[in-house]
Each structure stands twice: as C-alpha cells, then as structure tokens.
Image (cartoon, rainbow, N blue to C red):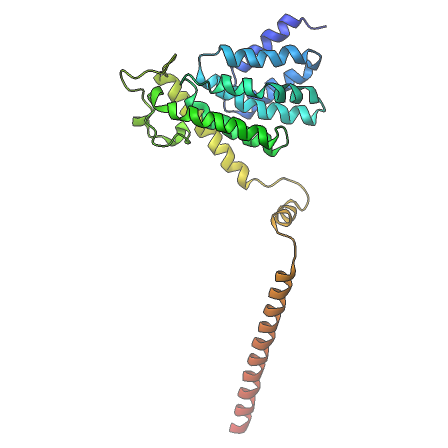
Length: 258
C-alpha cells in the first residue's frame, strides 16, 4: 500500500508543475484516479494549492486542470471527484480569482472553465450565473494589477507587451505581478489558443467521421427544406426544357439550310 504522505506530496508537486500542455494535466489526473481511495485527501490538495499559491499562473493552470480532471473522472466512473468539486466550486473560484485584486487577471480563466463545466453538465446553470455575478466585480480590479488592458475580458496573449508590464507605483492589495510571471502567462495563453484552433479543425480518425460531423452540424429536415427542394427541382426542369428547346430549334434551323 502506498504511503499517503508520499502520494499527497507527489500529487502536490504535479499540481505545482502544471502548464499549458495537455500531457501535464493528464498525468496529474491519472495519478489522482490511480489513488482514488484517497480522493478526499487529493481533492484537499487541489484546494490547498489554490489557496496557498501566490503565483497567479499556477492557480490558473490548476483551474484549467479541473475541467480535464473531471472529464477523466467521469470517463473512469469515479463520480466522487466530480461531487466534491461541485461542493467546493465557490471556494475554488475565490482562490483562483480572489476579491483582493490579485485575481483580476484570472477572471477570464474562471469564466471559461465554468462555462465548460456547465456545458458538460458538471455544474448547474444557476450556480454559474451566481458566480458570474460575483466575478464581474473582480474584473474591475485589473487596473490595480498594473495591467492596462482596455477590456477586462481578454487574455494576456491578446494584450500588447507594452500594456502588460506593471506600471511603477501601482500595486494590488496584496501582490504585484512581476515581469517573468506575465511573460510566462502570455506564452501559456498562446499555447492554449493554438491548441484550441487546431482542435476546431481536427476530424476524428474514425470511419465516416467527416460524414458524421457534417450530419451532426446539419439541422433537422423540415417543411422549409422540402419547399426549397421542390423549387430547385422546378427551376432545374425549366432550365432543361429551355436548353432542350434551344437545341431543337437550332437543329431545325440547320436542317432548313440544307
């Protein structure tokens, strides 16, 4: 039997070293599922890392990890991890984007992940709406971080470098971002954007995958579709009759010349 203390330490280390890659999230998720008999302890590791970390990037990476983690937990049939995250989601949000100003840069991360969790049925819409009302107020603190973004709903990868450098004399309530953290965040945001763009065009390697994708994206057949097909068929028949009539007329003309 594995030593509980060692399991916690290794999982904590994996959380601290999460990045924009899917591999790092998958590794940590699989580790937690491997030791599912310690699910309460490992869930508490996630909360502890979110609440103890001063690095906004680590908190953001853990937030992204949560969605991936719950996907694997559901696929693996371990609903307890999902249940515990549902129970503590407000605590998670408060840690990733706290109201002291240090979490303003993570508001969009929180919003994006919450929308994903709602879309997959992990969170009720009403819960997400209530949290959204709270984090809207925290977006207004972005200026205190020294991020001169004109729009609080953008990621750092979308902000010009000249606007992401902390301004002298401007500090948040508890923390101030350093240049290294900002550069790291920009790079990770770009990596995620790149992967999202690639996934949009990715087609599963399965038999008739392209046909199935097009079928799913096509709306149900209705009366309007039937009417359009009938009109198109009538137009086609008229065009064919006109062409046939022209050819017949030309043939008759040519015959009269001989």
